[in-house]
Image (tube, rainbow, N blue to C red):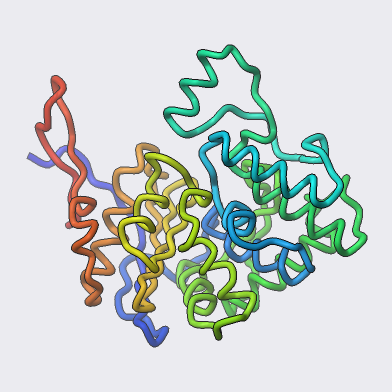
Length: 301
């Protein structure tokens, strides 16, 4: 018996960058949320931020608040001559399960460094310091850094930003289509070796633990499939680039709060366009538990 259905949209690009599969309103504006972080990280590099390796991966990531994440975000700030007080993201507790439990057992208070976007914010501040831009208002949509982010996103997606809002971390959130989102990652992945675009995606693939964290989906996918780039976004978004170049973007309309639909749909779309997803075959279904045991499943229709 079917209990419920997640609706949404999905687009998959071929290795050549052409639309190979499209379901739903893939040309309508949507908010990529944190799936746009690779684009924002590219803007940081273009502004001269000295980010590489783990620091570049965490600038493009949504980390789990583990000790290594907080330390790396603080290292980026220190290199720019700043402290965590410069961060304008909200204070938060770790999102990763083990880190969160340890945090609560220790009776600690929320910290800005532990917010999952602190790596991105640290990278933004690093870029501002390198350019001599103000740091107090770096989240203002008219700040030079955010103007550069907007220009970078419009260049990569080949679209004009349809709407500007405020993301959960306080940074500007820019609406583009699902096709544009996929196109942006595809262009970064297929950029020449040694380019700033490739530097971002290569750092993500090489340091997946800084993009997300233990027991989190993006780290798992990139660890189990070498060369894959994966970036989840709030409210039902997932953006994945296969090692062979195919790229998929998903938006689940109900927000997919339990994260049980977006990754499944993305991997099914990649499989449909010919990508070998056998290393993560188990992610093509999500178990539904009752009484502590599997009693049903979520699967693609």
